[in-house]
Image (cartoon, rainbow, N blue to C red):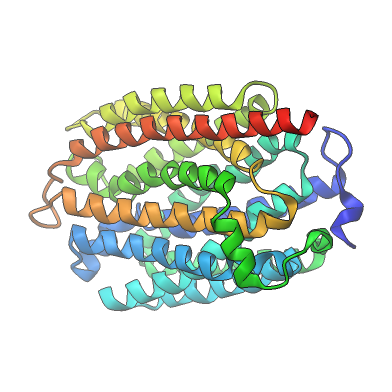
Length: 417
């Protein structure tokens, strides 16, 4: 069935849209879990392979950089094929990369495996987000993005605690093997239940994919959106890879209690994401984003300054940080989805994904260079510096998202005339 036959005509989700949302949320869950699981098993992995904090930053950033490069390479071609076929092909590559992670024996092998996995994950995520824009009206996208981003919460609630349990009982390798089994089931569901998504091909004008890529990246309006999304995820990338190491060695949270910490933050994400999605379709998205960002600045600074702290307080602070971060994502992604024209969506979302991954990769490397750990059992030094840097990044992001809002407002006024 062609996706054009399923074009939404009301603000309510159709049966097809609900089915698509469920499938795409599962894909997002798998991709996010594969990336996020590195953080909680980071302490185990670093000790098993004798990896330093700087090397671990490279393990994380290699995934991000490869995702960025792959997204850039395919951006010019992304609007020339059926979205369903692209998603299935690249998500299959993601499975192969995850298998490679599970069989890695040393630092060099895990870096190479993360490069492969990140390459296919980045493209899969860009295609996934493009599908959301294709199939949902602007006034529906806040809720749609909120539902898709629930994959993040599910990874925290189910994936990470279960992954930690598997890593502790069977070894960190089996955490990746579990992701592979889930991803194979998702691939089968995509093949059977996801309709073809090729309505965008009717809008194609530029035949040369390289020219299409160049026109997209040099579009002045698009560049404003690119600037905003570049900074959107860098803060999370700076702090996320070292969360488990920080909690274990600085805050004195036991490895047995780590699943509870991640579980609690995941529950918050599951509650906040759909709520923010609904609010994003009812109220000014920039205002919601700005409020979440300011609150996030305060929460991040408090979190990064923690020393030995009771578990109950760690859980509360961690939940507040997660709530603030989630309050930023739905409105920001909904705003960004309004920027590209239909014929440019694949290229735009691919480049957006690439820029986010690149910024995130740089964030992980910079964080790994800023903080210091004398040995695998010592506290992290200078972790508090990250809080101040992230707060500044959040502030800059507020300004850039405001510029995107001004662009969209100006475009609406022009369209009326």
